[in-house]
Amino acid sequence: EAQVTQNPRYLITVTGKKLTVTCSQNMNHEYMSWYRQDPGLGLRQIYYSMNVEVTDKGDVPEGYKVSRKEKRNFPLILESPSPNQTSLYFCASSSNRRPNYGYTFGSGTRLTVV
Amino acid sequence: GNSVTQMEGPVTLSEEAFLTINCTYTATGYPSLFWYVQYPGEGLQLLLKATKADDKGSNKGFEATYRKETTSFHLEKGSVQVSDSAVYFCALSEGYGGSQGNLIFGKGTKLSVKP
Image: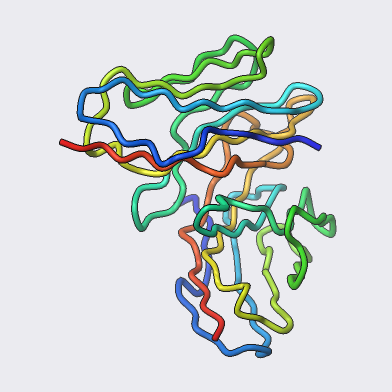
């Protein structure tokens, strides 16, 4: 089944403890992106990647890192999480060669930083 | 840069009422436009899309027309149901020459439909 898989679905962590949220897609998509969703602020883009080894900042990149060493994976890294990074995170992917196919989203990761 | 602006919510309607959620965009080039829906406790689902000017996207009774002259992509439904209660997001992709490009969202509009 074609899908975007995020892990974990839920995570509670403490301030300053490094964590990684994984995102993997099995559709050979070039484009991948991370968003965070907060009440009243909608979906804000953190980072995106147009292809392997190509990443760029979105609207709210501070406090986050990403890497795109292989096409299928796009992990989101929080080196020193803070409570203001408590949020619902979504990963998405898309194919540049099939533009009318649309974007596929993961099920989300709910992160709480205490 | 490119951006999407949609009407502030929440929007509360009675069942069978007419729905319009306004969405306007700012973009260079020829973006594709989307409406996504998020039901309570769930992720994002594509509702409909349009890839060029004057295209009409439609799904589940919802419609939106890509209006380049007014840079708009308003979502409409003739008769809403309680099951349509959700958050609706307008989005654009910065595609060029057939590629998808980066996906940018509006802030979302929460719709509540009362029986």
